[in-house]
Image 1 (cartoon, helix red, strand yellow):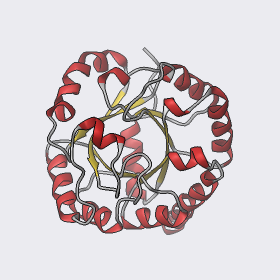
Image 2: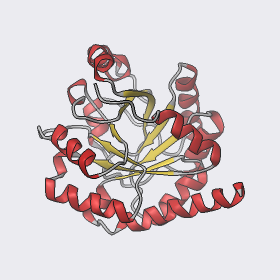
Image 3: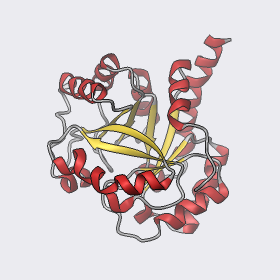
Length: 259
């Protein structure tokens, strides 16, 4: 078993209480080579990243564990598995976003896959972060909605998202993840993020469609604690500098308020 790492959930809650935001980069093993990952890790040294999420809705490649090992060799950034299936729990990560798809009614992704994975998770030594995962309509069909067999939350119904998140928190879930899905046409709206922020105390993660600095700023201003970028950085690595700058500007304000 790996040596203990700082408690990821506690660190995230501390950030939240201090008003500091976080940036996560979602890495899809199917879209990465060793060369492209090393290039990204070099960029992340210049433009700080707080978390690497590793996974996807459909992982076809068999080198997820090797890619995670490469990250751990070259970076101190915490690595969290972002699994869509119990088969995807491999690699020397620090923790796992234990996703329960509370926006849908497919029992396999509410509890079924978790039952299959439970013995492996207990033996893994991974830090578990129980997460209410909510797919939000992004204007186009996504792999996540297709693979999960669920209908996303309506884009223009923030009240439904707020009640869903509240129910998830009441069931004991520790994080809420609002996601437009990979390659989302539109990001989760500021109104929906704000409604969820008002409904729950849990840290809120927002991803999907955050392909401009303005969209990242809007998500953070509405109440997101962690923003997740992925596809757009694969297409335009220079975007990492822009989004890291937006997150840093929020944290500078929080630091000045504490001083």
